[in-house]
Image 1 (cartoon, rainbow, N blue to C red):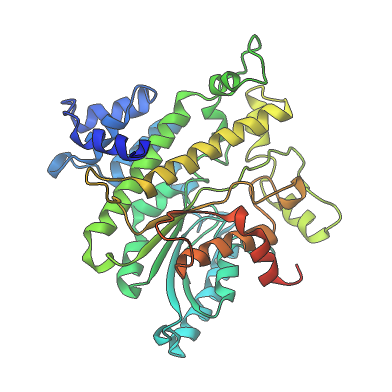
Image 2 (tube, rainbow, N blue to C red):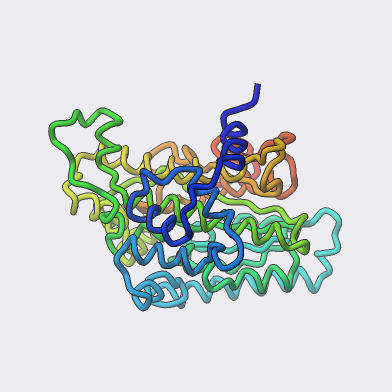
Length: 395
């Protein structure tokens, strides 16, 4: 019996065209995303020639979703500008030095080593104190990690500028890691754009209440993010240079809205960093701005967001063509949900503490070194908690 994903894939590829052009499909995606279907999606990504979807089209989608002009989008989406810039550059320089030290030592020619290029956001590049995913991966001497990640970077910026293409062509890695999408809807109160005011007549304990709370902008964002990644994967697949390269995505854990500027006064360093960062502004403030003050409802809304992001990545990783083969056989996903077991596992509203990132890094290593089960396209990081702690030693 074929699974539902395979059946949907076959139907999507064989379904007749809707006859809509690219512009009309993009308009439908942004203006009426709940009416935009998988069939519309397949028609959009299948267009060729002048009608082919481009990263510029999708960047324009983001501008429309947030009512931003190009100047504002460029300013907010680039992690190498603003208050994080110096810390980003400092951390990047240290990583470059370690990468080139290993390359000069002929580490790349070690049969047991893997060369990895990473592009992403603060889960790959937390500027200071916290050991992020890439920090843990670089501690593995069998991983030659070249990181372009910057805290604060948007997916819309990463793919539009295409810096990763140059580095992939130059380095020709075994693995490409990408962590992006979180900044596209967090920060500068952007989350509030995706929320409706709570409907008081609906029981707050019901799933219907959460669905009513989320507006069309979020659904337009998810369709746009899905299309961005599809176009990215198709581009890498079309280049024979990267046909054996693994691509690994991740979709974050259930972020925890918290209005407190300081998560814990027991750790002075954490307290200072919390005060200097935007914690409280990323999630709690935009939720409160729309009247979502109930803690359980706030957490349920974040679970909805994170579930939809992870479901989107899993669908892409497991997407099958009509013949039953994987559309993107080298794409894998790290499911980070439930890595954090308690509020104290969070460094701030949207970043885990070092031990959480160690667990996730362990999941990445499972895929990088192909240790996961055969045909397993999704690795649940939380399942590797004990393995990660055993390899970490003292925290």
